[in-house]
Image 1 (tube, rainbow, N blue to C red):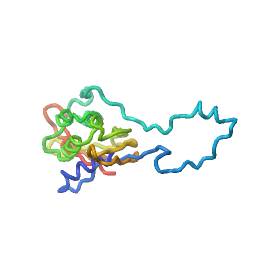
Image 2: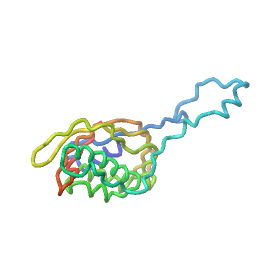
Image 3: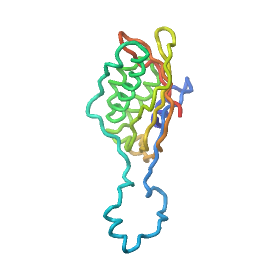
Image 4: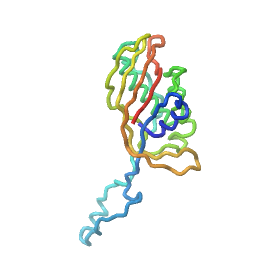
Length: 206
């Protein structure tokens, strides 16, 4: 996941020495690299112009139109529902990244989750809606690697997540920073609340 999240978490998790999420990069050939390819021959010039792919266009994350709903598979307090909850939580996080609306992410988080607070504090400043994030900034859940019972009704585990190349701006006047595509490990602990899991604590390490 992303540098954006590491910055957010450092401010609130300094006491825990927690590092947070991934980064992004600009894949455009115009970004600081000269074009060293030889010029096209006159005979191929017209064909090249007509069929040139739009490779220099950055991938853009789709903007969610509504907050995701908790799937039935993420309901209950089994290990299987805990695994499904991680996917649901990542989708809530992506909705917050895109819109800046953190209420649904907070509703699925324990009030004492410092990692969750770090992300939501960051999103008050930078998100897709206000131009603070652009490009392929949404997180992808690659796999949940393990989930085990952790005592006191909690479960803990790790998951692999990834993010594409995106641009981050920490304020309207800040210089945009290109972040490269990257992957990271999400370490999490879930706690029961009624008949559902909540994110009790999270830490994402590159």
